[in-house]
Length: 238
Image 1 (cartoon, helix red, strand yellow):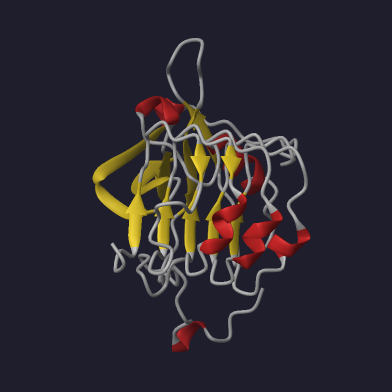
Image 2 (image 1 turned 180 degrees about the vertical axis):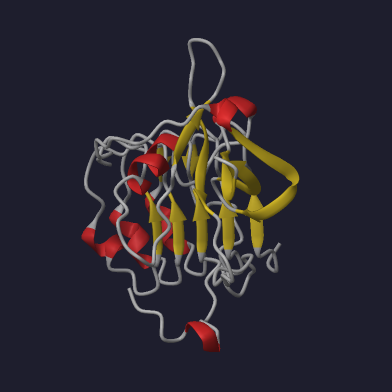
């Protein structure tokens, strides 16, 4: 297994992340989402070439400082765990680390917002007209108030497909704080029809005209879906 680059044990009953018996010399992607992992062993430091580590929806309570030895790590997903202590500064200063998801943990503060709820019956969308897909859901071409819009349908744990970056409620709360001309601010959200369990089902957003996607589908080369800006976007500044 010394040439194995990607390994997934998603949705099993693993209780510990240990480098024992893992091909540490070649492993680049390690996917352990939806397990029962409560401990990350100190020997995780042996995973020096891992660039993408998926640990959302487990029972992890802390991150060992030994993870600072994973110098190639670019993306780590830790959403919906039980992390209740600060992340080690040695870990946070990893030179290539560009993405951490922490929503749904005790240490993650979800801001109180006044998000706009929209009646589900006032929104329609075409499931055959997919505008894009991501870690948290799929975006379709839809209609709201007789205007073309983008309708995002969230992934939900209840369907067996969970979001690796947190819960829909977290995303909706953050979006409600967005106020920038170069960021998309949603018209609002609509809830599911399930009686007694009305969760965030979708988000309605403006339909962007003549927009260019900068984030590409991830590969072993890109890992985080990043892509260099095109000629038309080089002058874009936040």
